[in-house]
Amino acid sequence: MKSPITGKEMKLIKERRSMHFRKEEFEVVFHYYKCEDSGEQFTTTSMDEVNMNQVYNQYRDRFNIPFPDEITRIREKYGLPANKMSEVLGFGVNTYRQYEAGEIPSIANAKLIQMAEDPKIFMGMIELCGKLDEKTKDRYVRKARLLMEERKRNIFNLNFKKYLLGDHLADIYSGYRNPNLEKFTEMVVYFSEKMAPFKTKMNKLLFYADFLMFKQSCFSISGVRYKAIDMGPVPINFQSIFEYLANKNEIDILTTEFQNGYTGEQFKARKDRPFEADLFLENEIEILEKVATVFKSMSTNDIIKFSHLEEAWKKNEKDKSVISYEHAFELNQI
Image: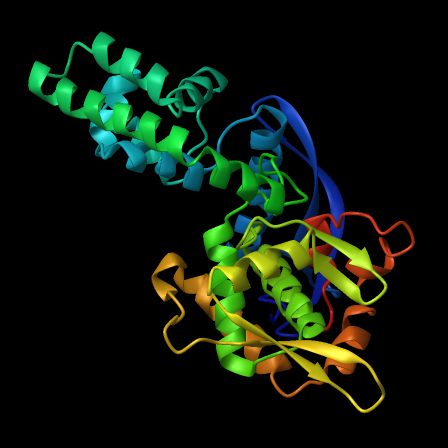
């Protein structure tokens, strides 16, 4: 970006700063351009979003406030429009829609939204709502009961998914997303279609996609946590997840024997299982495409070397620890 004062290219600066929101203080990696001649600082709209999203995400994490995608999911599972959900919870008519669009709920309203996720509690809220007619109440109560029965039937699958991806709320180690096995699955399918990578390379592609998305938006794609091992960053519990996806016929994993005696597991897309792009936002698709383009012709050994140059790996490799998504701001190989 050129300085509006001198017309010269400005230097991108990333430094830790304290910012305030709702009487709380948060430390962020603040992004800005600096004009070397005048000393003036400038930001773009996208930079402002990254700077403020760091604050908002930390506020939500500190006070256990659900994120917009979770707020939307809770409403959609009952089949209510946003204005009706507002009525059930006792909010203003447009309030729930605003929360889904990114406005941060008060702590009290956040608790109500989280309580509504439980179908049994939600039925009680429906019964107490004076703005719904009896016919409408009956419809939503029936839906809640069906969800309760479905939850009982699928309790094993729900618990198994929690085992695979972890039972944790959105935080800096998940890229401020709740773990989403469906999206993670599609990411694996996408990269299998594009380049049929071996397992070690697949792990790096997934890492770069999630962390590059966070670098640009302060949100990951999948909500999956990554850790540092000798071969570079990998999704936590990746072996079990990949076996699960293969057993579900989401992808094929073929074992190849090499002349040096080693074996490799290669991911192959299935003709009867195309990539489902509709699950992703436009900017998420762009990230997947960029990662695929950059690393398509790169060998497994080379992408390992690339990942070893990232601070995300270097600062966590010794302890084999979970990687904070804040290291996404330090990505330098893509």
